[in-house]
Length: 333
Image 1 (cartoon, rainbow, N blue to C red):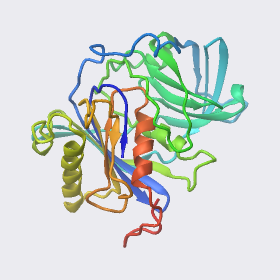
Image 2 (tube, one colour):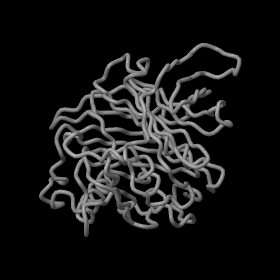
Image 3 (cartoon, rainbow, N blue to C red):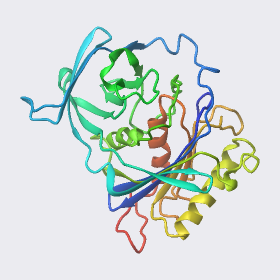
Protein backbone atom coordinates (compact mmCIF):
# COMPACT_ATOMS: atom_id res chain seq x y z
CA UNK A 1 0.00 0.00 0.00
CA UNK A 2 1.44 3.40 -0.92
CA UNK A 3 1.07 6.78 0.73
CA UNK A 4 1.63 9.75 -1.58
CA UNK A 5 3.47 13.07 -1.15
CA UNK A 6 6.07 15.26 -2.86
CA UNK A 7 9.87 14.84 -2.86
CA UNK A 8 12.27 13.11 -0.45
CA UNK A 9 15.45 13.85 1.48
CA UNK A 10 17.24 11.51 3.90
CA UNK A 11 17.10 7.87 5.00
CA UNK A 12 16.30 5.97 8.19
CA UNK A 13 15.71 2.25 8.71
CA UNK A 14 13.40 0.95 11.45
CA UNK A 15 12.46 -2.52 12.63
CA UNK A 16 9.51 -3.26 14.92
CA UNK A 17 8.67 -5.99 17.44
CA UNK A 18 5.19 -6.80 18.71
CA UNK A 19 4.58 -8.96 21.77
CA UNK A 20 0.91 -9.21 22.63
CA UNK A 21 -0.08 -5.58 22.20
CA UNK A 22 3.43 -4.32 22.94
CA UNK A 23 5.09 -3.02 19.79
CA UNK A 24 8.88 -3.13 20.03
CA UNK A 25 11.00 -1.32 17.48
CA UNK A 26 14.55 -1.59 16.21
CA UNK A 27 15.74 1.46 14.33
CA UNK A 28 18.54 1.45 11.76
CA UNK A 29 19.58 4.59 9.94
CA UNK A 30 21.47 5.15 6.70
CA UNK A 31 23.14 8.53 6.44
CA UNK A 32 22.36 9.65 2.91
CA UNK A 33 21.38 13.29 3.19
CA UNK A 34 20.02 15.62 0.57
CA UNK A 35 19.85 19.38 0.97
CA UNK A 36 16.30 19.99 2.23
CA UNK A 37 16.36 23.55 0.91
CA UNK A 38 16.95 22.47 -2.69
CA UNK A 39 13.27 21.65 -3.10
CA UNK A 40 10.59 22.99 -0.78
CA UNK A 41 6.89 23.61 -0.58
CA UNK A 42 5.37 26.81 -1.85
CA UNK A 43 4.50 29.63 0.53
CA UNK A 44 0.78 28.86 0.45
CA UNK A 45 1.26 25.31 1.75
CA UNK A 46 3.56 26.54 4.52
CA UNK A 47 1.42 29.51 5.53
CA UNK A 48 0.10 27.90 8.75
CA UNK A 49 3.25 27.95 10.82
CA UNK A 50 4.90 30.21 13.37
CA UNK A 51 8.00 30.40 15.49
CA UNK A 52 7.28 29.31 19.05
CA UNK A 53 7.41 32.18 21.55
CA UNK A 54 8.03 32.29 25.31
CA UNK A 55 8.95 28.62 25.58
CA UNK A 56 9.36 27.44 29.18
CA UNK A 57 10.24 23.95 30.41
CA UNK A 58 9.71 23.22 34.11
CA UNK A 59 11.35 19.98 35.22
CA UNK A 60 10.60 20.42 38.92
CA UNK A 61 7.66 19.05 40.87
CA UNK A 62 4.53 21.08 40.31
CA UNK A 63 0.90 21.30 41.33
CA UNK A 64 -0.05 18.77 38.64
CA UNK A 65 2.35 16.20 40.13
CA UNK A 66 3.79 15.66 36.65
CA UNK A 67 7.37 15.12 35.56
CA UNK A 68 7.41 18.01 33.11
CA UNK A 69 5.51 21.23 32.47
CA UNK A 70 5.93 22.90 29.08
CA UNK A 71 4.39 26.23 28.12
CA UNK A 72 4.68 28.40 25.02
CA UNK A 73 2.75 30.80 22.81
CA UNK A 74 1.78 30.35 19.16
CA UNK A 75 -1.08 31.36 16.86
CA UNK A 76 -2.10 34.01 19.43
CA UNK A 77 -2.77 31.26 21.99
CA UNK A 78 -1.12 30.15 25.22
CA UNK A 79 -0.32 26.45 25.51
CA UNK A 80 0.26 24.59 28.78
CA UNK A 81 1.31 20.93 28.57
CA UNK A 82 1.67 18.45 31.43
CA UNK A 83 3.82 15.45 30.53
CA UNK A 84 5.05 12.11 31.83
CA UNK A 85 7.76 9.86 30.40
CA UNK A 86 6.65 7.30 27.83
CA UNK A 87 7.29 3.97 29.49
CA UNK A 88 8.72 2.00 27.92
CA UNK A 89 9.46 3.77 24.59
CA UNK A 90 13.12 2.71 24.68
CA UNK A 91 13.78 -0.79 25.99
CA UNK A 92 16.23 -1.23 28.85
CA UNK A 93 17.95 -3.80 26.64
CA UNK A 94 18.02 -1.53 23.57
CA UNK A 95 21.12 -1.59 21.37
CA UNK A 96 22.07 1.63 19.58
CA UNK A 97 24.96 1.64 17.09
CA UNK A 98 26.73 3.70 14.45
CA UNK A 99 28.06 1.58 11.59
CA UNK A 100 30.90 3.08 9.53
CA UNK A 101 32.04 0.42 7.08
CA UNK A 102 33.50 -2.42 9.18
CA UNK A 103 33.70 -0.22 12.28
CA UNK A 104 30.81 -0.21 14.76
CA UNK A 105 30.49 2.08 17.77
CA UNK A 106 27.82 2.18 20.44
CA UNK A 107 25.41 4.97 21.32
CA UNK A 108 23.77 5.45 24.68
CA UNK A 109 19.95 5.31 24.48
CA UNK A 110 18.31 8.41 25.91
CA UNK A 111 15.02 8.55 27.76
CA UNK A 112 13.64 11.96 26.85
CA UNK A 113 10.23 11.14 25.37
CA UNK A 114 6.93 12.20 26.93
CA UNK A 115 3.17 11.82 26.58
CA UNK A 116 0.62 14.02 28.25
CA UNK A 117 -2.18 16.53 27.82
CA UNK A 118 -2.64 20.15 26.82
CA UNK A 119 -4.53 21.41 29.88
CA UNK A 120 -4.93 24.76 28.14
CA UNK A 121 -6.83 23.07 25.30
CA UNK A 122 -9.31 20.66 26.86
CA UNK A 123 -6.71 18.06 27.89
CA UNK A 124 -6.00 17.09 24.29
CA UNK A 125 -3.29 14.47 23.76
CA UNK A 126 0.36 15.45 23.33
CA UNK A 127 3.55 13.60 22.43
CA UNK A 128 6.86 15.44 22.86
CA UNK A 129 10.50 14.43 22.69
CA UNK A 130 12.74 16.85 24.55
CA UNK A 131 16.24 15.62 23.84
CA UNK A 132 18.60 18.04 22.11
CA UNK A 133 15.59 19.80 20.65
CA UNK A 134 11.81 19.63 20.89
CA UNK A 135 9.79 17.51 18.46
CA UNK A 136 6.22 16.38 18.81
CA UNK A 137 2.53 16.63 18.03
CA UNK A 138 -0.62 17.98 19.68
CA UNK A 139 -3.86 16.32 18.62
CA UNK A 140 -6.68 18.87 18.58
CA UNK A 141 -10.29 18.42 17.46
CA UNK A 142 -9.87 19.09 13.75
CA UNK A 143 -6.11 19.34 13.17
CA UNK A 144 -2.68 18.47 14.47
CA UNK A 145 -0.03 20.88 15.68
CA UNK A 146 3.46 19.66 14.84
CA UNK A 147 6.51 21.05 16.65
CA UNK A 148 9.94 20.81 15.03
CA UNK A 149 13.34 22.44 15.46
CA UNK A 150 13.97 24.98 12.71
CA UNK A 151 17.63 24.00 12.53
CA UNK A 152 19.21 21.15 14.45
CA UNK A 153 22.98 21.17 14.69
CA UNK A 154 23.15 19.12 17.89
CA UNK A 155 23.15 22.13 20.19
CA UNK A 156 22.45 21.15 23.77
CA UNK A 157 20.57 24.42 24.28
CA UNK A 158 18.04 23.98 21.50
CA UNK A 159 15.29 22.76 23.81
CA UNK A 160 15.47 26.02 25.74
CA UNK A 161 15.64 28.29 22.70
CA UNK A 162 12.12 29.15 21.50
CA UNK A 163 13.33 30.96 18.39
CA UNK A 164 14.83 27.71 17.13
CA UNK A 165 11.48 25.91 16.97
CA UNK A 166 8.48 26.20 14.68
CA UNK A 167 4.94 24.91 15.06
CA UNK A 168 2.83 23.85 12.06
CA UNK A 169 -0.87 23.29 11.64
CA UNK A 170 -1.81 20.14 9.79
CA UNK A 171 -5.41 19.12 9.12
CA UNK A 172 -5.88 15.37 9.30
CA UNK A 173 -8.18 12.60 10.44
CA UNK A 174 -6.96 9.69 12.53
CA UNK A 175 -9.86 7.58 11.31
CA UNK A 176 -8.54 5.49 8.45
CA UNK A 177 -5.19 7.33 8.31
CA UNK A 178 -6.32 9.59 5.47
CA UNK A 179 -3.88 9.96 2.59
CA UNK A 180 -3.65 13.74 2.62
CA UNK A 181 -0.61 15.56 1.29
CA UNK A 182 1.92 16.32 4.00
CA UNK A 183 3.87 19.47 4.56
CA UNK A 184 7.50 19.06 3.68
CA UNK A 185 9.86 19.16 6.60
CA UNK A 186 12.26 22.05 5.90
CA UNK A 187 15.09 21.32 8.27
CA UNK A 188 18.81 20.73 8.20
CA UNK A 189 18.69 17.22 9.63
CA UNK A 190 21.57 16.28 11.92
CA UNK A 191 22.53 12.70 12.65
CA UNK A 192 25.04 13.62 15.36
CA UNK A 193 22.53 12.46 17.96
CA UNK A 194 19.94 9.91 16.86
CA UNK A 195 16.75 9.50 18.84
CA UNK A 196 13.48 7.69 18.01
CA UNK A 197 11.25 10.76 18.40
CA UNK A 198 8.81 9.74 15.71
CA UNK A 199 7.85 6.62 17.66
CA UNK A 200 6.83 8.75 20.60
CA UNK A 201 4.36 10.32 18.17
CA UNK A 202 3.28 7.07 16.49
CA UNK A 203 2.73 5.59 19.95
CA UNK A 204 0.34 8.42 20.75
CA UNK A 205 -1.55 7.98 17.46
CA UNK A 206 -2.14 4.30 18.21
CA UNK A 207 -3.47 5.11 21.69
CA UNK A 208 -6.33 7.33 20.51
CA UNK A 209 -9.81 6.42 21.85
CA UNK A 210 -11.12 5.47 18.39
CA UNK A 211 -8.38 2.89 17.78
CA UNK A 212 -8.67 -0.74 18.90
CA UNK A 213 -6.59 -2.42 20.11
CA UNK A 214 -4.11 -0.01 21.68
CA UNK A 215 -0.49 -0.59 20.70
CA UNK A 216 2.51 0.30 22.84
CA UNK A 217 5.71 0.96 20.90
CA UNK A 218 9.18 0.19 22.26
CA UNK A 219 12.49 0.84 20.49
CA UNK A 220 14.82 -2.12 21.03
CA UNK A 221 17.49 -1.58 18.37
CA UNK A 222 18.88 1.38 16.46
CA UNK A 223 21.64 1.57 13.87
CA UNK A 224 22.98 4.48 11.88
CA UNK A 225 24.93 3.53 8.77
CA UNK A 226 27.52 6.00 7.52
CA UNK A 227 27.48 4.19 4.17
CA UNK A 228 24.74 2.16 2.53
CA UNK A 229 24.91 -1.63 2.88
CA UNK A 230 25.85 -3.26 -0.40
CA UNK A 231 22.50 -5.03 -0.63
CA UNK A 232 20.77 -1.63 -0.44
CA UNK A 233 22.96 -0.16 -3.16
CA UNK A 234 21.07 2.41 -5.21
CA UNK A 235 21.57 0.48 -8.44
CA UNK A 236 19.66 -2.49 -7.02
CA UNK A 237 16.51 -0.49 -6.31
CA UNK A 238 16.87 1.84 -9.32
CA UNK A 239 17.52 4.86 -7.14
CA UNK A 240 14.29 4.76 -5.19
CA UNK A 241 11.74 2.76 -7.20
CA UNK A 242 9.24 1.86 -4.50
CA UNK A 243 8.69 -1.84 -5.17
CA UNK A 244 12.34 -2.67 -5.91
CA UNK A 245 13.48 -0.66 -2.87
CA UNK A 246 10.92 -2.30 -0.60
CA UNK A 247 11.87 -5.78 -1.85
CA UNK A 248 15.60 -5.17 -1.26
CA UNK A 249 14.96 -3.86 2.22
CA UNK A 250 12.60 -6.68 3.15
CA UNK A 251 15.23 -9.21 2.09
CA UNK A 252 17.86 -7.40 4.17
CA UNK A 253 15.79 -7.33 7.35
CA UNK A 254 14.75 -10.94 6.74
CA UNK A 255 18.39 -12.02 6.67
CA UNK A 256 19.08 -10.06 9.86
CA UNK A 257 16.20 -11.84 11.58
CA UNK A 258 17.42 -15.25 10.45
CA UNK A 259 20.83 -14.33 11.87
CA UNK A 260 19.28 -13.77 15.30
CA UNK A 261 17.78 -10.27 15.25
CA UNK A 262 14.39 -10.25 16.97
CA UNK A 263 11.66 -7.92 15.76
CA UNK A 264 8.19 -8.07 14.24
CA UNK A 265 8.34 -5.28 11.71
CA UNK A 266 11.07 -3.32 9.95
CA UNK A 267 10.79 0.14 8.43
CA UNK A 268 13.31 2.05 6.35
CA UNK A 269 13.12 5.84 6.48
CA UNK A 270 14.87 6.83 3.30
CA UNK A 271 16.34 9.96 1.78
CA UNK A 272 15.56 8.85 -1.73
CA UNK A 273 12.66 10.43 -3.54
CA UNK A 274 10.59 7.26 -3.73
CA UNK A 275 8.72 6.81 -6.98
CA UNK A 276 6.44 4.25 -8.59
CA UNK A 277 4.08 5.44 -11.30
CA UNK A 278 4.91 8.97 -10.11
CA UNK A 279 7.33 10.63 -7.69
CA UNK A 280 4.60 11.49 -5.16
CA UNK A 281 5.06 8.40 -2.98
CA UNK A 282 5.65 8.87 0.75
CA UNK A 283 5.51 5.24 1.90
CA UNK A 284 4.88 1.69 0.81
CA UNK A 285 4.28 -1.59 2.65
CA UNK A 286 2.94 -5.10 1.99
CA UNK A 287 -0.62 -5.47 3.26
CA UNK A 288 -1.34 -7.74 6.23
CA UNK A 289 2.18 -9.18 6.59
CA UNK A 290 2.98 -8.24 10.20
CA UNK A 291 3.42 -11.90 11.14
CA UNK A 292 5.54 -12.74 8.08
CA UNK A 293 9.22 -12.68 9.02
CA UNK A 294 10.25 -11.93 5.44
CA UNK A 295 7.68 -9.33 4.48
CA UNK A 296 6.83 -7.54 7.72
CA UNK A 297 8.53 -4.38 6.50
CA UNK A 298 7.80 -0.92 5.13
CA UNK A 299 9.54 1.92 3.33
CA UNK A 300 9.02 5.56 4.32
CA UNK A 301 10.37 8.86 3.02
CA UNK A 302 11.81 10.29 6.20
CA UNK A 303 12.49 13.90 5.35
CA UNK A 304 9.21 15.65 5.90
CA UNK A 305 7.07 17.00 8.69
CA UNK A 306 4.53 14.18 8.52
CA UNK A 307 6.79 11.13 8.60
CA UNK A 308 5.21 9.94 11.85
CA UNK A 309 1.77 9.93 10.20
CA UNK A 310 3.08 8.05 7.17
CA UNK A 311 4.82 5.53 9.44
CA UNK A 312 1.62 4.98 11.42
CA UNK A 313 -0.29 4.62 8.15
CA UNK A 314 2.04 1.96 6.73
CA UNK A 315 2.18 0.07 10.03
CA UNK A 316 -1.62 0.00 9.96
CA UNK A 317 -1.53 -1.70 6.55
CA UNK A 318 0.99 -4.23 7.83
CA UNK A 319 -1.39 -4.91 10.74
CA UNK A 320 -4.40 -5.16 8.41
CA UNK A 321 -5.26 -8.61 9.76
CA UNK A 322 -5.29 -8.71 13.53
CA UNK A 323 -5.47 -12.47 14.17
CA UNK A 324 -2.02 -13.65 13.06
CA UNK A 325 -0.10 -15.80 15.53
CA UNK A 326 3.41 -17.12 15.90
CA UNK A 327 4.88 -19.70 18.23
CA UNK A 328 6.49 -16.96 20.32
CA UNK A 329 3.54 -14.58 20.50
CA UNK A 330 -0.06 -14.55 21.49
CA UNK A 331 -2.48 -12.52 19.39
CA UNK A 332 -0.28 -10.05 17.58
CA UNK A 333 -1.58 -6.67 16.46
